[in-house]
Image 1 (cartoon, rainbow, N blue to C red):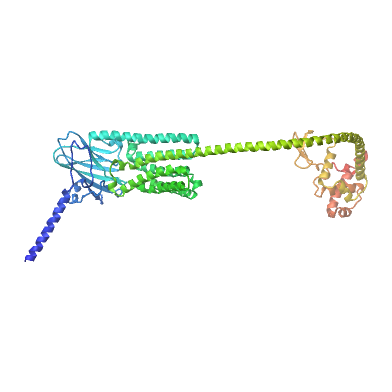
Image 2: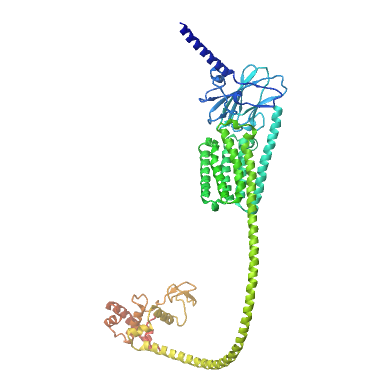
Length: 635
């Protein structure tokens, strides 16, 4: 019996301990006291409780239910985060009102990239009103025209007010909730905008300066650097809310993806700037190929995100890949002895540190998030990087100037050595010229004597040349007369005597010779068109044909002759006419076929045609003073 009572007592004690622990968990949340001496307070750790709404069905009424309200857990990090994208998270904070405070206070949410923030504000009777914020709404819908999200709070009553906050975002969001007095907020906001003005002013100054350098020097690294720092400014404006406030306040859809576009252009132009500044195509060809591949891959990933899945833009940690490639390229080239890469390496070292810090904070290392410095660490790193990159460009110019001066000194020294060498060569040439002049002077006397002899010989040769010229003139006249006589004799023999085909072929060896003879015979008295009687002509399409320049009628050389439309070779046709004429038509077709190596029927047909022409022109040939077979040719 005693044992049973003891067991029951142990169970009761254990149950009471568990109940006390549960109750302590529900009341353990620290309430932040409103006081005039405290200008701002950031809710951290146990001051902010969170609950993940995995079903996405919770609302304010269900959240306030004691069963669900007990599921809120205190933040284990100084700044809680929404690590699961597009998942709704609930946060709870408690504020102890102070009616005696003279200052007005507001709640500010620091992360400008949150898509949806719904703040449930309690009133004095325990009812809640919803205030919707977030960058998916138009900027003009905000109560305060500020890049962050703010709502004023009513400091009424003496009790503790519990605020519920619902957050949903397509990016990893920092639930930074700050209680600020309005006085402090105004001073802080003015200073913050001043710092933004300085930051973006520096970007514009650096951009303008390097743009002028690009225009004057035509070097691509300046253009890539301008595009890079403008992309950095574009990215910073997209993430800190300045762009949404001033550039596209009525474009919430574009505001959701603008940072992704800026981040892509930042990575691409950073790699192109690295490639151009470090001359990787020459100094590190393998790294140059890696950078080209990285640029193509980054652009393809950007297009996929833009066209198919905008939520992938939130994977900002992927930018560590191009950052690491550029950082390694600078270290490698500097290690290989390119001194202009030292400031480049320093700039990327600072940026790498800032990027690593933001990456670790994103992974949940809350102890690194120690205020505005860590929050804006990447911006500070970009500023330092711009300064170091400017030094890198200036250092490159300095090295180029030093090399140019060294080259100029080397050229001057080379020119001095060339002058000395030229003087030495000139002295040697002068001595050679003197010796040569003496030698030439001696030989000139010999040449003068020889010239006298040559002049005498020339006079004799000239006299002989004149005699030879006279003899050549006489010989030419004799040759011309002889040639004329030979032609006359040959032509007379052709016209009257009998000769074999071999001897005849020497006079009319081919088609062109026969056509020329026909042309000379047809138009020996001049050309006259058979249609319009015009006397001017052009050469026709066939050899020795003539085309009237007025009517265009073209007459071939065989037209209106006994050779027109004959199918046998014209030189054989010439010989056949010649034989028939010289034998007065008594030569047989068998004899013609034997002599011309043609068929007897062909010779008979054409011979009959010739004999017919002889018969028709018999009376004409008797009256003609000129005898010859050419009388048969023309119609």
